[in-house]
Image (cartoon, rainbow, N blue to C red; front, side, top):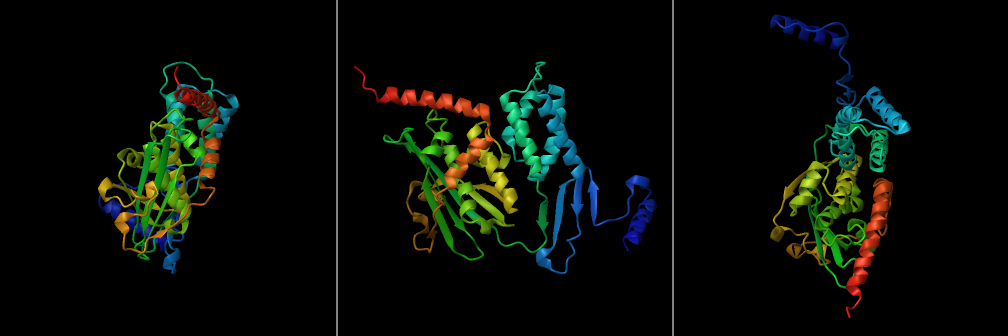
Length: 357
């Protein structure tokens, strides 16, 4: 049947006056085929069981091995010219489309700085070396993209909010909180969470106390927190996020930010997106209409009064795991800079607390 169908298509093209390419460009029809370095697997698209039917899309192993080989070669040589960086960036951007093109914005930014450089410097610095190692690890974790063909459940609706306010007794001088309200139309019951940033995570997000405003990062934290508490809700789901901070919303849409802390949180978000196989859409909600405003300040959602909204608690190690991931992913050079900034922040706080004579 596939052969007969292919011949019918070629005959139709000839009738229309078009010439169909032959030879290697005209392979027989298959359930698994490649096009432009991408493999499409339709072998499970026609299953009798609708629940398991899906299309699988992934980079070809040949393309992945070529790019990973190039990264290893550069790391071994400890050198990268601007011209080769530009070539490598193009191949990596194509391969990263498998992850919506949004994972690793920080690593791509650092690679792009070398690609766009006008100097003849080729030696790898700490930041560039870290970005290449991250990209190599990212490709090794590369996961096929599965597109389920079964009917979708109704979209998950999530409202998030973050708060950052001065706090006299806090070590960093500020207190940051985050909250979220989740409504699943499939079971009809809303639930919410709210928490404040612990000292360790706050130190990371404020560059050791250097920054006194992290509202944007506070707005991103609940987007990770809800996936930690309710991972089963996100599996293969459509998700609509309602966010009242445009900087945070645009950061998630682009998958990156000029601010390193926000870029890292966005990368973590899209990594969890790939793991869950969900598809997210981001909308703006006016602050007065955002039910997550109260949970971000440690209060039950006033706008959900009268509903059976359940309050959920984050795992005790949620922020600890984020800090460990930060240390592992942000690179040695950034860690050293962070320690220097931490020392400066401590000195500044000491000067503020020391009474003048």
